Length: 139
Ligand code: IDP
Image 1 (cartoon, rainbow, N blue to C red):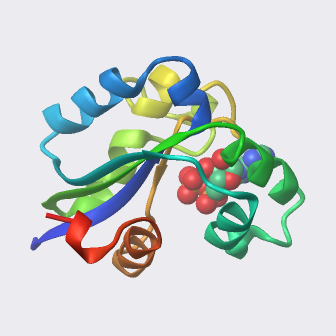
Image 2 (cartoon, rainbow, N blue to C red; image 1 turned 60 degrees about the vertical axis):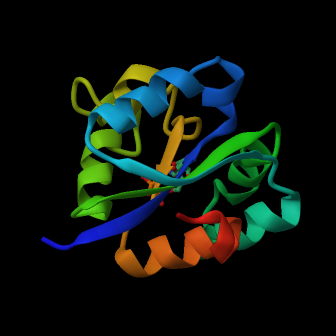
Image 3 (cartoon, rainbow, N blue to C red; image 1 turned 180 degrees about the vertical axis):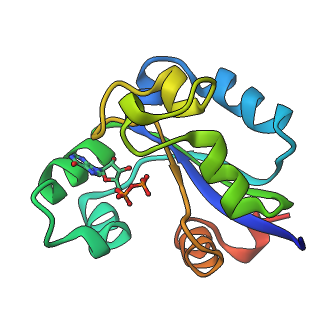
């Protein structure tokens, strides 16, 4: 397994509830190296573009509203097998189905407000990282 990268966001609900420190600690303790990090606030246009793949889904409007209602933490993470291992660490989309000890099980309230994002492929990790960070912001 090659060392590679994934992209994550701590979503507005996680930031509002004061979980930034706890979630970043869990990410670091799980072997991920933070190579880019910032607090940022997505505009409506940003969220629509980021989640364009879901534009035909019934929850799209709700998702865009949620992701723009407050700041998020965006980060790029490095580890062997980063994309797959991070998806395992965050757990299922619906926290009710997430495994014990996963970030969504610990910190998410619902399938909509599920605390954290993790890229689903190496290709999307690169696209999503470039969406939020300039090359000089990734180390
Ligand atoms: P993922 O974030 O686990 O990859 P996706 O299916 O790609 O899940 O969905 C993207 C995001 O859209 C989810 O993380 C969640 O915030 C939201 N979402 C997904 N399904 C629903 C739903 O049925 N109702 C409301 N929001 C949803």
